[in-house]
Length: 328
Image (tube, rainbow, N blue to C red; front, side, top):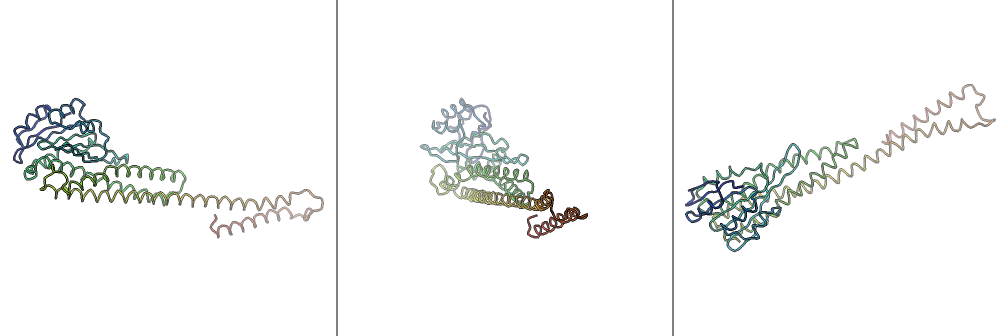
């Protein structure tokens, strides 16, 4: 689906619309560059873009099928850029990843979005259209604006993940029941998987943007390098936090396993303690239950009460001793 197209000349918007790819391509001859945005385009739409804008077939194939890792690839005089936009559902505590693909040529920039519907790039478009100084730098300005928006959207996700990790860390040290321990372990694994998935969106992009910052792509003018440097700084900070989350979750998981073992040992100790207490009266009753003719206190009137009293005294004494040792 075509979201919008715009023609830029002299840093200003001279035409825009959302009718067709062919109409957008017709504007190429009368402007500095054309900016075209598509949402989950069909195969026919991608083919039309390839024909009208001269896109490389391998890049078009990647953009159509999606499921790409973040990267920047150079084809002749154009760039193909893959970004992963992300959103964190605070209700379900699930990470959702989409994709943004950019085709960057001398006189065009095509933005293709797959998923990530919660991330509206319209506000970004309004901001960059007011920056004539950046638009005069050409299609690279749009690439910077899109990357900056995607990386800025990572910030709230890092904060939400941090809160969830703090929460699960607290649960580990206060979980008592086995059901609570099981739920906490599952939550740790879920968070660890989400952090690894988030890292797959941030880590590869750091390397790619470093190449842009170093000026290795002629499609990005030197005037924009400092802007990309700012994006790299923000992305590096996010990536370092994500790496820290991964290590912290590993430590939390190890601590949870250790605490589970400690709790299991406590349970075994308690069972052993109560078994010892129960064994004492069993021993006494077993002796007094033997049916021999000549046994002490068989003729005694107080033999049975004394046997019961002996059981209680020995059991209570053993209970106090085990309690003092911390077994019960």
